[in-house]
Image: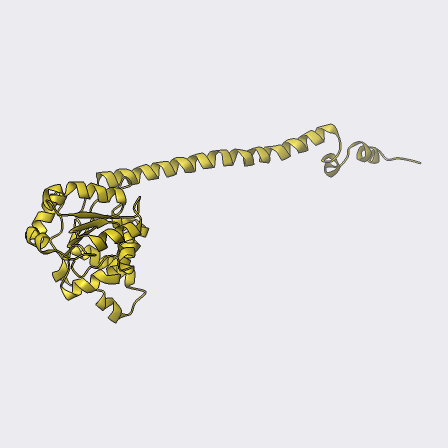
Length: 264
């Protein structure tokens, strides 16, 4: 049987397709080709999280720097009006929103950030001595101060020493104080000023432990910022509780003209 030379070359030289599957050299080549893209794939995740984390850290630091360097802006009555409009805008009818609007006449002068708490109270309530002397009703206070936390409540109580004189101040927050204890104190004694958080004050009003009919002044601790530079209305839970308290009773009293609102 005659074999052509070209046939010998065909037998001795396997096709390229066969070479990719046979022989140690070809296997090594295939292995290298497979490892190369795998190495590229593994190298990418190692770089991406680090760069993303650095970007986030830079962004966070930048925001903090801006907040720290930006000059504080005192709150004004329009801020509270806008807050209420935004909150109720999509939930209430036009008539209901109108009924929840605070009249301009109910607002006291706002703090321009130059006052201490005592000096601010002296300015907005020059007849405090008379109110304090005439107040004899239980389960009520003449002045109600609403702030974001128990710790802030204690700070404000200490800082009003020059204003309050010998009047009695009641702590109206939940930390270390049970609501039944506060209700008993209000029922048995006469208190002139209540300082506390919106959540506890709202609970006392709902349970008839605190009556606001004798209240003349309600002060919102509007401008103070915590360690995260948040005001009380920047904290979602505190914001909701404050608005709920306003809707529950305070807005109605303001519209009737018996309560004045101040933003400290």
